[in-house]
Image (cartoon, rainbow, N blue to C red):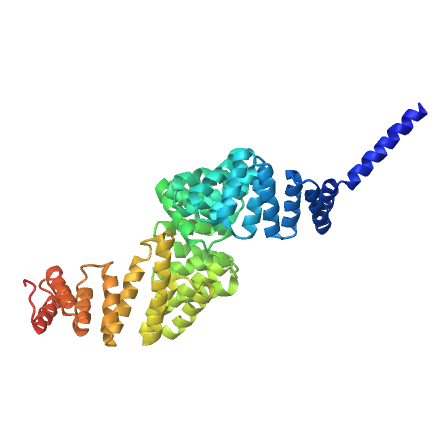
Length: 495
């Protein structure tokens, strides 16, 4: 019995020694302990000893990847793939390596192959989705995110990214199901709430929209688009009239501050601006510290053309609120109100401050251009209009085609006219023609375009646009001017 026990102990000792001397086992252990360089050294020895062992190359590739030696990682994993072409982990790691090198197409190929082998890994499908999204292959990315969600219906990151894809593509019905789920999982995310409100608005789910929009505005009252959606939802469901009716039956002096605010908002949604202001003013008498309603009051004063009061409200809002959205809108609206008061220098200061907060806002650049024009700062006005053109055209290519057509028409017109005044005729014609894309039968635009071509000695184009004036605007001053222009050219529209 003692002899047998000694034999067993000897065998166990020999086996332990054998494992300790096995570089693959030791390398894997070192890797798991975080000794990356030690693991690399041991695993190199392992592949020298076992050139046909895919596991050795796999672990070596893993170690190289952790050491950021990406080229060596890929070389090791390619060897592993040659030996074991059905191992999903090899393709997964190859995808990670290519992703580190920003070789997105390579990463996609490897992740796709890995997910074909292992169709139950949500991690693989998420990586595949992310790589496709980075490559702007949004349909493929959406399919991969959906596979993640099929495997894990509560996967918030996948739902968020899928929601973004549908949202940006304005695929509102598809987005609705995703945001319904997200709202259940993360009901307090402001970003999700704002997007969910838009989706509900676009799909005309007004009953569901109202509580979501109220939640957004409670968190961030500067979300003017959501406020508009809420007003539309109230109108669509008839809630505004009912709310106004209910509050009108009570003595306003008996209403609590929050009830007065709700009353004012309902009145505003019904375009009853004077009555809405009356309720807000009651609020300010009851609670002088209510910063949250000041911006709303400013916009109402603008609606009823009480511009000095509007400026006062917006300047108070700037002082009492640090949110960038409110500060931007307050500066811009204060600037516009001052323009109505013909205080263009003061207006310019506010408008420029709004652009410091949101330098890519198209309306702010338009307002700055208009203010500079009023000040006679022609060069600055042209610069602002050209910046507007740049931003609006960029927005058109980012899924907002047509949204800023009115601003573009004004900018092209104003720049074109100024260039005509400056006798830069060819350049003027280019801008005026672009304005005509939005108003092709505008008599003044047609005539200015003809005159720009006339003065740049382009007789054929000048005749063409003079004749367009005659056709579109008969019996007008522009038509008479066009007729005189044709006479000077020695041309006739019938020729």
